[in-house]
Length: 320
Image 1 (cartoon, one colour):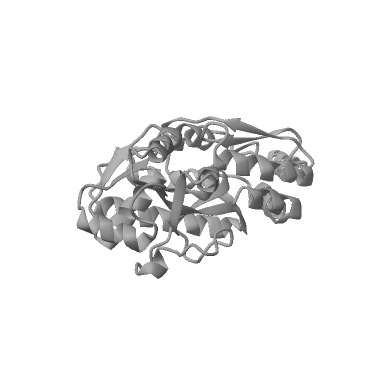
Image 2 (image 1 turned 120 degrees about the horizontal axis):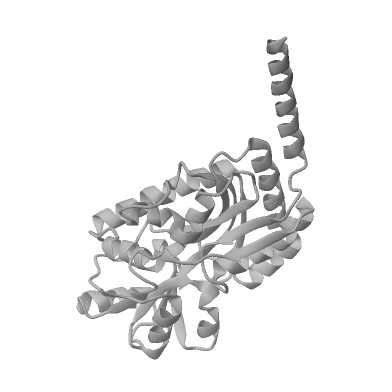
């Protein structure tokens, strides 16, 4: 009798769990952007979320929890209940931190559930408009003729622009001076003013200055030419095969996310990214929709971790 009661209780619990998952989502979902409002990660998230909440039939609230290069927001999600109501927008910094930081409050692989890739956008190699080089080849020649005199800026040591430029310098044999700033804004401001010479950053955050003639684009960092800048060569095609990096944006949940909830979110967000209205809005920001599965996102994150670990090690960048 006792055994029968326990079996009945177990079956009831399973049925209740299945029923509760079937009802998901029955309350608002919180999506954590680990950066302040206004950046490309935030913009992409809000565009995609607007469509995803229609598909899921439930409100999705975007929360900005910036700080420590995305670590604060990532840690918040890592420690959240794996019920599908607290999600993280991961991006390039999420993978970089796994290799750059001496100690993280979470395990980048074990403490998260990849759900879907949403978008990516390549970097552009920028120069201040008065600098004495108008092509990437001229920049390389100038830098080699003036070792240690060309200065590049970034949003901080270990940021994607810093590592992307460091990877290039290593491959091209360039000696440059790195000036890290507290964020993209001041780093770009000094580039525009001519206090630094060059910078790599996302075209989405610099196209206004390029169109105004204050900055010039010498190359793109993607593997192929970008449709937005079809006449701008890739760094790889200019003599540096294999050079490629782009800024990616994806969705993750805490570890232990139930498979049916993960599947429901994966389907909704991939559909949202492919929606014509979403595609149009992302294209307007020069950001490329990139709907990819949870498995593809997991593989991409591991590949990114391995790549940046090698760059950090080969360039003798101190862990933070």
